[in-house]
Length: 336
Image (tube, rainbow, N blue to C red; front, side, top):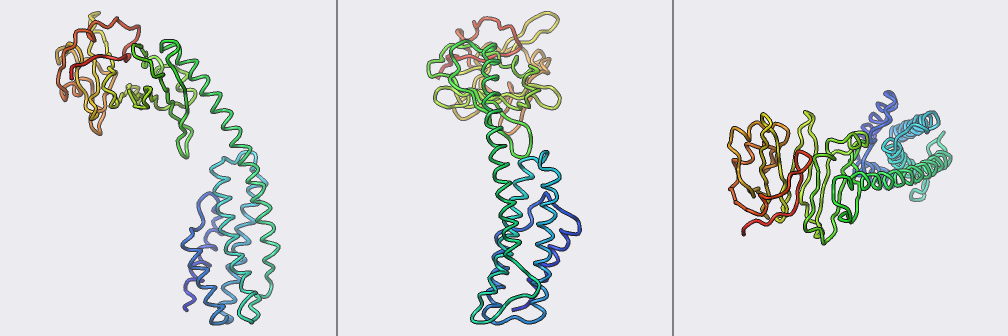
């Protein structure tokens, strides 16, 4: 079998060591399998000086990779993020696998495959020791993150109670984004939340949301259906997805020369939207620049979103009391 596989692995390791590359994944299971298959063929076919030299260079490169990781750990362990520690841990695992594969040559088919100058057992012990330290660190960080998340969930519930009628929140949870500090807040309503007003714009505009890196607010009913999702885009515009829970509507109100304009939008079960109130004139709708509504895969201005839906006049929903904020949602009864 050609030694090209060993040459490629050797070069990859040397490049990484030369660049002192630390925070990217070194290799994957497929590459390690190819390396293992090649070493297995050496057990079958025998080893020559070229292969022995390549394996020694690979081992020394793996040892250097371990040293670089260990130095970074000793120097920066207090400031390393969990993502960086996880990458270190994964790369140590790959180094360990490859060193163990090389060590396995010593148990060839009745032949001595010892590569002079290599003591794999010492490196294996050092890797396993450092992995254990990282496991303990990650466990502690996870416990701290869980405690912070629980505290934030309590604060969100406390804060949201100012914008939602008391006794209607069943649970609050946080969903973290991968590889960044942002998170989403998920508000679960109780099953009997049939006539509530939720001032969602107040929460979206609140400094509390910004300070705690909350990107989106998801509100779910008792059946775990999303009744509304809201976030603020980079231009400060409030964006809404009305979900598929048709029993809820969201009321938008805005002012033009001290005149108030109101429209209520609701969702259909297929995710399209419909009008559940009187409809202002198009020119008045175009004056609302503060919100965007999801239609299909796009977030449209209020005026453009309204153009996509049919009006379904509903006397009861049009008599909703005026809120103290720009928009809120509540259950509405719309014709079938």
